[in-house]
Length: 343
Image 1 (cartoon, helix red, strand yellow):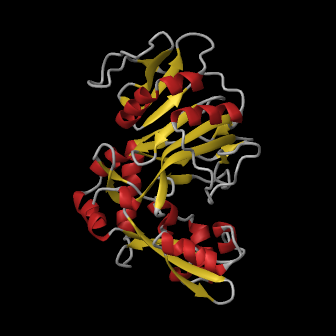
Image 2 (cartoon, rainbow, N blue to C red; image 1 turned 90 degrees about the vertical axis):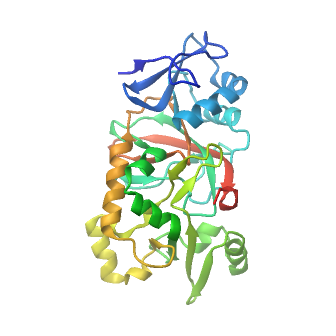
Image 3 (tube, rainbow, N blue to C red; image 1 turned 120 degrees about the vertical axis):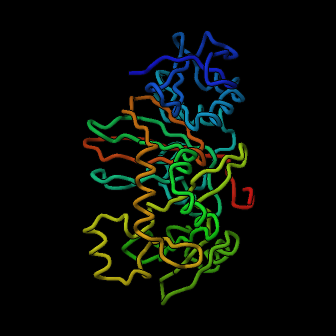
């Protein structure tokens, strides 16, 4: 049950919204300040209009709490969700290659096409690339009959929970994300780069600082050096920011890992991740990372019409298995690159 609580953006208590008669704030449970929950205090609040007027307040709250759950605003369509996202983040991204676009929506995507009986592990969206969204929005069009929660974890808390020696290692070495495009096993390079011209894919790699090598007639091997520990560009706070769990071979389901390694040598797997110098990330380190995410995790049951806004560098997200139909759509924007981060 939601525990009502007032909010003061300077002190953690008290509330003084610019229009307190329209929106009230609370938390999901005592002691958990992520996400902040915003509900309409009166009937028929137009969330897009309110958000546009109160964009500075939303931004301040987001940087403090890492995530905001807008609940009870009676959103009836994906287009209404897109209006809300655009009101908060006018520069929504419209060319994201890893997610399928939502039909009839210009800058909204379907959620990750992943087997519903499997867990999606914690990650920061596109943190394995040179460019990623600072803001990410999730909208519940249809909640699952059972399961399907989107657990979130405050990346500042994860950073603090990890052994400082492990954090220091990642700060010094960074990480190397490897992607081998293998036809019929993962998306092809043509699908990913949205071209059949090798030169276009090569230009993209050069611009994004991706090392690449063509392999045979239709294979492409790539790797990119990225941060796993970073400083938030607006707050300066240290965060654990990565997609280690989505790429490390130890995080695959045992039967999937065994099947893949029966066919490929580890360096030939479709995806993997190493320290930035190419040395393997120890399974013991991955276990500690998993434990830190579990300790920091907060989850909730989706309700139809919910909108979850996360700062993609302050909060990592995942997905629980589910049964029945489920539809969550996604929007993202305020793109940033490695060059924009503090060293």
